[in-house]
Length: 426
Image (cartoon, rainbow, N blue to C red):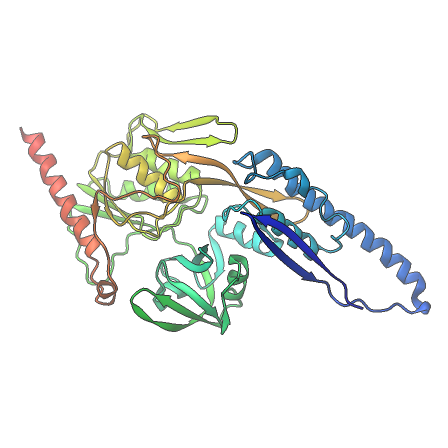
């Protein structure tokens, strides 16, 4: 006997149907009647428990979500919509996904237990996979950025690569979660990604999965690049991890005698807001770093301390893979005229998510609770931050290992250092 049910919601005037086919259930013989009764009670208790999970998510969105109109809909209609349909954890997950999808917010999402555990590991500084962060844009599964020194980066994956297929399975109509689940796997196994890249033929990449250690701070320079001895180089690949801020400060102490610093935020998709504030604070003197605005319009402004850790000239490298916390730091240094930004326009993620642990279910909810504004009051969501000096890195540059953006950063920084010396000698 097979049971099935449909979940319906209307999003942006389009009817969407999510179908769920429950697993076959075996007939119970009369000889196992007693066991059948026991199981029935257990299943009823389970259904009630999973309904509690669904309602928990509904309540969080109702009280926390940034857009109080919840995408212009009556949120109360969702509360008991699937009470009689949720029987298993998988049922609850699909019902929650359907409810959340109606918000039309790609950053607010339900995170099942297995994935939530991985997310927590990432915050701790470790994860497993090929080391790429992916997202969904216009229905396309895209590489947001490869993580430095991981199988994905070593294989040659780049920001904005479109993933057409995973192990031969098309990503058309595939969610980010399903794509990520297909890419993940045991260490030592191989995943095949069919990649579409602008102006080049489609290519299949065979990548061996490995344990990924997130190294947020690095001073490793690209091959064949000679950095002037007066300059310090810091590659900040992620704001994720509890010790990123302290590690960055340690690197700045190491560079205290350098005359200028290049901070490389290219392909840094963000992380923890607190890390962005802590690191920005090193370069500012009682200036505004960022302002956040919640659903009630309450504006909370974070200012730097007065310790002013570094007065060295700064150049920041950015590109279309620089997002979220990277944009907070870039915006703070740009608006306060503390650094020169070089590279390409950033990604444009001006929303802040809160990670809610759904105890005792082991799952989580990433929910948009605030938007943020740069010190000048600019909302950069879906717009990004423009560099002072635009320098594009072409496919030919990458193949030739010719980092024209970093070369320009060094050229500009050396001129800034020279100008500062001239000013001091007057």
